[in-house]
Image (cartoon, rainbow, N blue to C red):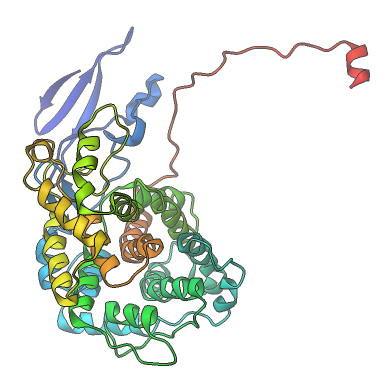
Amino acid sequence: MDSAEKGEEKFAILQLPGKEPLRLPIIKGTMGPEVIDIRALGKQGYFTYDPGFVSTAACSSRITFIDGAKGVLLYRGYPIDQLADRCNYLRVCYLLLNGELPSKEQYQEFEGQIIHHTLVHEQIHSLYQAYRRDSHPMAVMCGIAGALSAFYHDNLDIYDPEHRYSTAIRLIAKMPTLAAMSYKYSIGHPFVYPRNDLSYAGNFLHMMFSTPCEEYEVNPVIEKALDKIFILHADHEQNASTSSVRLAGSSGANPYACIAAGIASLWGPAHGGANEACLRMLGQIGTVDRIPEFIARAKDKNDPFRLSGFGHRVYKTYDPRARVMRETCHEVLNELHIKNHPVLDVATELERIALSDPYFIERNLYPNVDFYSGIILNAIGIPTSMFTVIFALARTVGWISHWTEMQEMPESRIGRPRQIYIGKPLRAVKKQSKKTSNKQ
């Protein structure tokens, strides 16, 4: 395939067997690599093969940009470290939904809308009773999120901008309530209602850890750390769960069903379950003196063991979210005065090795955001089974922002990936004799 320019337009010239050269437009986004528009291939009887869609742009988007080679993550053009340092989660939510950071007045209005939608319909409480107490909270969240469309069906016209926006507000506001309820149900505690006088992160901590017997005092260091975790996980471009939301949404499905699809996709250990897998790995190592054994296994090509929480599919250098999370992690550990904690001791030593061992440095196997967020959540008392639920809570704004953007894009159409068929060729079903047919 060669490239050619015509005026300001650029084309890739593709020579197909027995056909005239095909001119494929080359599209340039605001940032990132140029993209070859292959839509004309289908009319020529061809399509491309790209398992995992690692070289395929399924949509255009204005929301998030990632440059994995340089370790860059931008929300609407703003660097993630600046947003985490200078904004709270709700300001970032407004940014992702609306494209710009809010003014003081816009923020107050937005915050008020969120605060007054944190309650869930009282009948939703009874839905939890249908689940076993030992159900994984993500199983519960998948079902409850989809069921929201049965309770809030008064504004499900996906073509109405006001309906889309009010649904986004409801999802962002209610997800912490539903997540905390999943936890409370699993341990047999009564549900705790949200409080409008607390911050978004503070309210979630309150619903998680307070009981009717005594009030829970929100620690500002923990509150700030959790708020940063929410910001860092709010969006990450066209990952598996976001793509699931978009694919479900492309059929015209209601937004609650689409978010449920995102939650289901996020549940996988290769995606949102990574920090849960990381904590299990730390528990498997057990003590600091066993770390050399597992480091040796990680370096052994013939050993299937791999260190969870190190490296990233997209980032080929230090994950920019991990830089922020590393500092926050140490702030939390210092605040809680945690000493002689086996899991955290192992994590701290693994971090030291990964940042100094040439094997890890040469392969860009730095601790990622899942490594640090898992340590923080573990330190503040959130059970491992809730890690991915918190990820889903934070990512809801990203999902609904992409869903909304997709509805507004005139070029959006129902998703329909193609395949290379490698099964049996055309063959006929043999006719059965009448005797055989009668016996059957």
